[in-house]
Length: 203
Image (tube, rainbow, N blue to C red):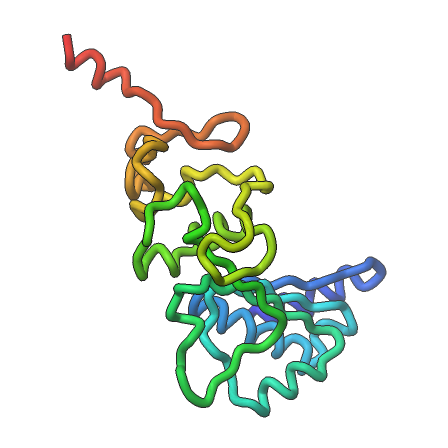
């Protein structure tokens, strides 16, 4: 269980400054929210601050749950929501988002195909790309700016999608056993490498 491991680690590092962070995406974001609340509600954190960073989370709990969560001083929940993603809008009745939110709009990115689709609007890789380039919260297309201030390789967007513009020469859904010729470089970026065997087949 997560909570028993948290208790063990908090006890092990009781003489050090400790903080606890949980994260998740989609249903995992809802579970991460509940996990963070559980840790604080049951005192497993022993006063250590608990943070939850959740991406594309559906609503979690009713209005009373939201009130209780707001009262926990040791708990901070930070939600990231893509404006066109439908998942954070569900369930439509009776459930609420908790914590502070950042609204991003991946349609502002000059790297992604427009308009995108329901899978790209919900993809964790597109969310992370959106966070890396968002220059303040804004839901209006064209408002604000998009600039990749975070050194995050754009090739990651196409790991399991075809969301990058074709001009970037990154194969769609390249993350597989051989990664479709994509190789990780020493700096952590991914590049399309010409396959030696393919070259030999041409002669």
